[in-house]
Amino acid sequence: EPEVTQTPSHQVTQMGQEVILRCVPISNHLYFYWYRQILGQKVEFLVSFYNNEISEKSEIFDDQFSVERPDGSNFTLKIRSTKLEDSAMYFCASRASGGYNEQFFGPGTRLTVL
Amino acid sequence: SQQGEEDPQALSIQEGENATMNCSYKTSINNLQWYRQNSGRGLVHLILIRSNEREKHSGRLRVTLDTSKKSSSLLITASRAADTASYFCATDGNFGNEKLTFGTGTRLTIIP
Image (cartoon, rainbow over all chains, first blue to last red; front, top):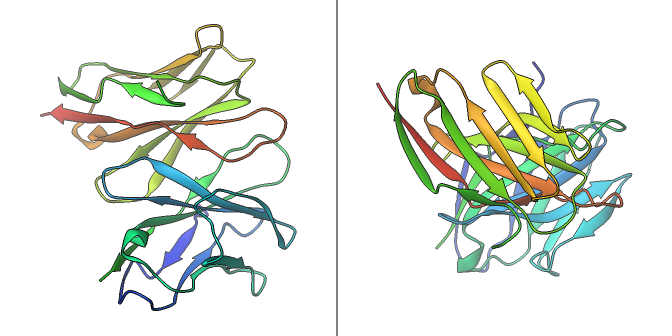
């Protein structure tokens, strides 16, 4: 069964460093998303992406964040200068075109900012 | 309450019993989805129910939706130890707003 994959599973970085989180969505999906979950809190929407551009972003998704689909299979989230409060589990999700808004999530990348 | 609030926050039952979790939301929705999350792991999609549906089944799962009360329930029948996880409802809005708004989750523990 096709699934969303994410790498790395765990990333540790120093405050102020740049990180890139990588996702490979399900191959025939056209809509991509990033969410995050701070430990013990709700899953929060960050950004949606379709047709090589951002469809919607939350207030969390400030200028420090960017997304890219560099090729036909990868979808990345870059955090330019990490802060302690960026420590969270980051989930990538994708969905097919048409139909209903069933979003399928990857296993997540746990980002720890020291 | 906030969009997507589940209750109870935690539920412990014996293996073989049925588990019922509830979700309430505040604004109009297009769809409501339920996800499972094993401790520290990813979100597994369980089931989607559209706003014009009242009930949906998938295996041992039964989901109901009452848009007049802005609430949904997830019933897991004949629970198994492997059902131990957190369960979240997630709603999306009208007019093509795709972003999912998640609830706080119900932590379900199945006692063998």
